[in-house]
Amino acid sequence: MTLKTAMIFAAGRGERMRPLTDSRPKPLLEVGGQPLIVWQIERLARAGFETIVINHAWLGEQIEATLGDGSRWNVQVRYSAEHEALETAGGIVQALPLLEDEGASEVFVAVSGDVYADFDYAALQAHAARLAALPEPGMHLVMVPNPTFHPQGDFGLVDGKLSLDATPRFTFGNIGLYDTRMFRDLPRGTRRALTPYYRDTIARALASGELYTGWWENVGTPAQLDALDRQLRSTREL
Image (cartoon, rainbow, N blue to C red; front, side, top):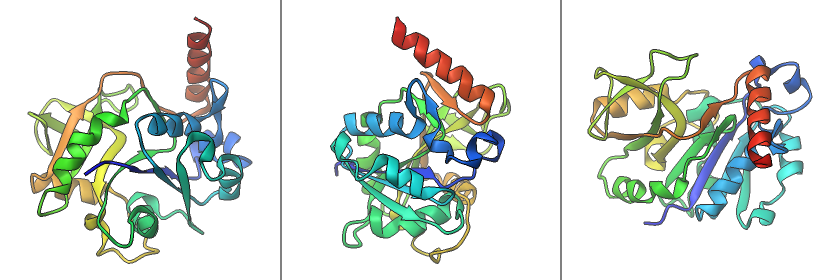
């Protein structure tokens, strides 16, 4: 199979980013001269993705007005509107008709709208083909070295397999491959995080992972946003 569909989570309120997010959705906050979410769309487009599904809730009309149909990046952008944010798993379930073509199961990449990374999404193709061939739905998570704000990490990583118990532990980088078959039992409109799915899939030895050590930032506060903006602008000036 060819990995061609991505989802960007953009429905969160961004409480820690207030007051900046009182009048603008967090993914539209700018770093290096353009919105956070545009950096992701550009990288996904360069990696050959054709369809990008974006869920939104808080001030979602601004996201649609800013990004349009995606044609400027040669991708098709589809929007999954949520009246109230359904969290990550709930957002995926709500968006299933947009992620799947005519109900056929799909392996897709999902990334949080507040992450900046130099990650090459094309590197996930081989993992997607492997997941699609599994009799049961699995997942593949991109892990990163533990940032200062999350020193204990999330999961262990041993020989390409994620573990709930092994050490050292690394932090989930909010970039993952998922199989739509995993979410078909959850009713649409249900609030549900992805955490229970991670733990269950890892426990059943159906979750692989990799460690990414390149540029990765989880932009959670105005100070982090400002630091990333200055970093990107200085890099562009070199």
